[in-house]
Image 1: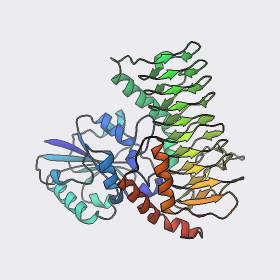
Image 2 (image 1 turned 45 degrees about the vertical axis):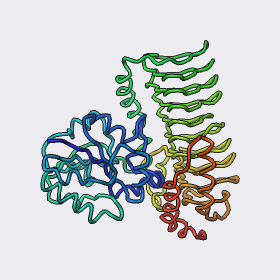
Image 3 (image 1 turned 135 degrees about the vertical axis):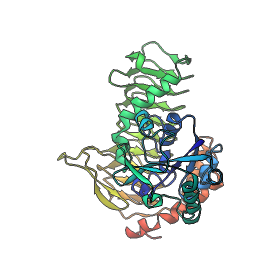
Image 4 (image 1 turned 180 degrees about the vertical axis):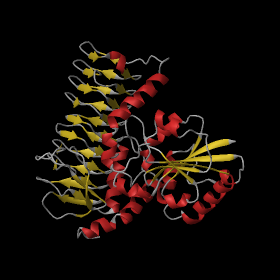
Length: 435
């Protein structure tokens, strides 16, 4: 009997907004790999299909040409196939793969408290589930625990991501875990990179530097407290300091004098500088000037102007409250910085309070602190009334920004922009912004 993995989104994806407006939950990065890539690493022999919110499906097909998206009909018609459904919010690692093996007891739901972690189904139960999925999930494309009523329930302590700050909380351990897997896979490779005189590699056995990367004089890469993984064709300019655990993605640039501290992940094609600590930055984003970014999560195509500074610790050291879906939630964490959605921009000398959330495709400027919650598609100065950044302007800017990186804005992405603009209209209405 063949086994297929269906990586799915559940109803709690809303807690991870604005980071998941432009992507499914399983495309979030934690450590070196995205949550989806972890599944592919730890279940290497399985055929992986994707199930996401309906409005993301066409875009996901464009970006994942080899994977089936929101289509399970092959499994429906096969009596000799079972499917392991895995929640896209799960952090899959070696321990998870042992607790929830690819093959095992059938028709069982693995849960962590009231949250579904994974479900293994086959035969008639699988066929009924897929038919119900096709019938009932056409509009939103998400699952809930009620979809698996009647199956045996088994508690498991596999980690799920509930809020954006959870990704930061687990980033250090995931950097270590991902490094071990990736370095093992590279054990027979000796990438050629250029290391100038005056470069110091501390605990070199815990450092991986990829093909074509250039490390210029005065750079210190410190892996004494955790591994450092540097991708292919990365440029690290002089006098930079990188402390592990840390990750720098392919084709990224680390600017002169940058200070990148522990538990930091920088995605591919980014430019980073200044001081960064315990933060995750998705691909094609820039924070290349002086200023501090700490315990923060930046989506893709974000640009932070020179001197952008975030606070990640309150003066009274109390837990940070963060706005989730427009309402304050106690994170329970002492350190929480800023969360910035895809395609948003901050101007020079922008400052952000602890736990600030900036939606997608927003433009923040002016002196002083903006509100701790800025809706998606907002345009405005700190301390002033924000106005709506209309979809046409946002798309036009995105097209120009992407062209500078030799990336073309597709029709699917333009449609996605307009859909997300409509989905976020209620956010702006609640803040009294013109629609």
